[in-house]
Amino acid sequence: MRFKQFLRGDYAAFLMEWRRDYDKSLARERQAKVVSAEDRNKEATKLAQIIFISRAVNSTKSFGIAPRSMKTPQQMLGKHPQTPNHSWEAPVPPPTSRSTLIAWRAS
Image (cartoon, rainbow, N blue to C red; front, side, top):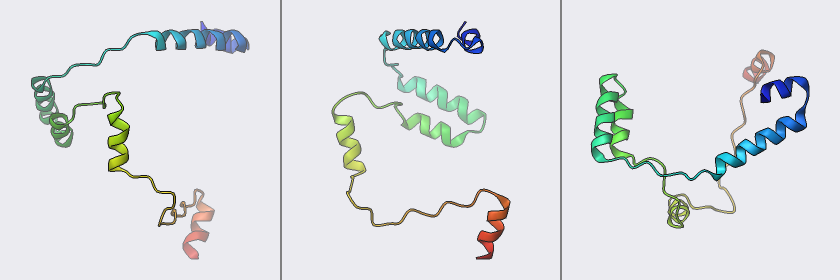
């Protein structure tokens, strides 16, 4: 329905429908998925069988998404402190076209 509205050029209706559905999806109550150690081990076994070794190891260690709490941002800031000044210069991005690549390599 929204695709047809978009194709017809009825952008106001298109955006209203999208916004209604977006608000509806946000209103739904989400429940955190509870994953046991046994479930993680089963997943790791499946991943190892198809030769995704690093994913298999990570699945046994990882608990997924961090819980929403006040401790999470504090923990992140503790691990990755923010500083007002950086002591390094940002690298120059590589050229994107072939002609600038040739000129860039020549310099």
